[in-house]
Length: 205
Image 1: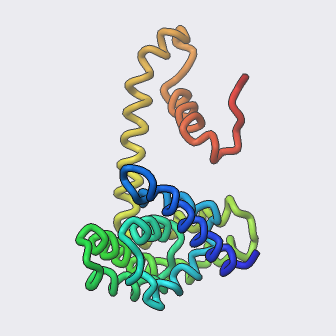
Image 2: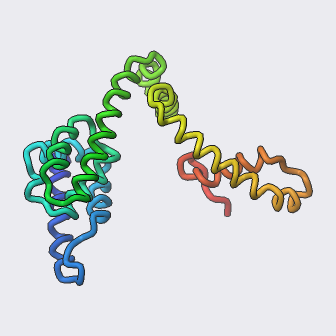
Image 3: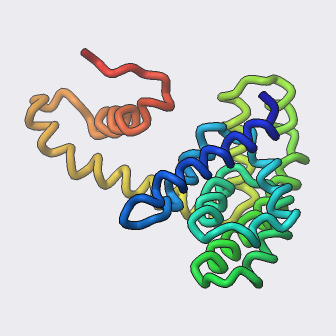
């Protein structure tokens, strides 16, 4: 199926969901349900969704549908979404939606600059040419770490929390293992447990 046909099917799914929810107490779907429905199609429907927003479809959408769409676009939108998001920010009659649109538009505007700069870096260009997904992800993350001043701060916060959890766990593990494990061993195991699904590891029987 094409991206457009996928998108039209997603809209039909939303309409069916809204019809079912109309019989319930809330009488409307949650924005999270719309986000999840869109995510079934991955990033393929982002472009037709953005085109629909640019054409003014958001003016006819209720807040739960628009809120869910913007949650989805937080992962898959491009800078093409900035203009319609600014329109939503200024003209949609629900304050929460205006705030959500502003935050996403601000983020995308910042990312647009970062993407443009990252594309110029040799390591990113080489990784894209090589086609290895692990190398591409690594090169692009390192590029963002250099370009986005907020990236190292957020990464450092994650590292700090991870190391603290490892340190808090170590005394009990050290006693259980009779001193045979180092804190580095514990930290490595913790990373593997927390990110098992992304490291391609299967759970032990």
